Every structure is written in C-alpha cells, then in structure tokens.
Amino acid sequence: MNAHYEHDEVTPSQEYIKAFNEGYFIAKYNSELSSKTVSINNSSEKGKAFTLGMMQVEIEKKLDKNNFSMFKTQSKSNTGQQKDKGKDYIDLEKE
Image (cartoon, rainbow, N blue to C red; front, top):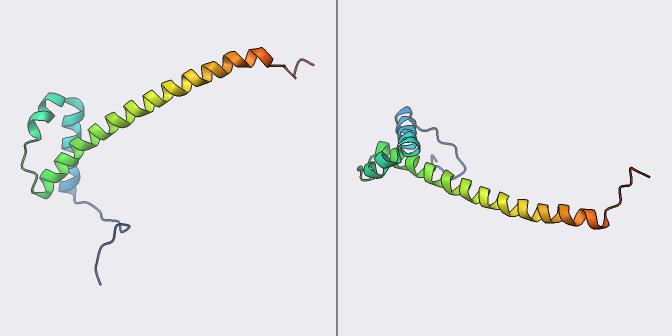
C-alpha cells in the first residue's frame, strides 16, 4: 500500500518551491503586480504553488494585524493593572 496520509511528509519539488517563493516575493514586495498576476492559469503545479505563495503573504498580513490588535488590547489592560497597583500596593522589600 502506497497511500499518502495527511501526516505523511511530502517534499515538494525544486520547481514547486521556486514558484511558491516567486509568488510570495511578488505579493510581498510588489502588491500592484501581484493583483495582476492572480489571473495566471493555476491548473499546473507551478501555477498553484505561485498562487499559494501569494496567498501566504495575505495570511501573514492578517496574522500580523490580529497580533497587533491583540497586543494593543493587552497593553491597555496591563496599563489599568499598573494604575491599580499603586492603590493597594505594599512594597514588602522596604520593610
């Protein structure tokens, strides 16, 4: 039996990696060009890899945006904790 399962590792070909990286690079550093290249025929493995590289940039942008907004939320709540700290805070090291 030679079936592939989701947990099996598959090493992509050098051509696939190159196409993925090209799509990633274009999307990351030339967004105007990447929106025009989305219409590339992605029925081939190379075309699919190129498209997935461009999609990876969009995923990273969304993750960065979510992480930044989560960081801002945490910073605001930590600032509130710092303000409250002085109210009832007793420095045990002074005693």
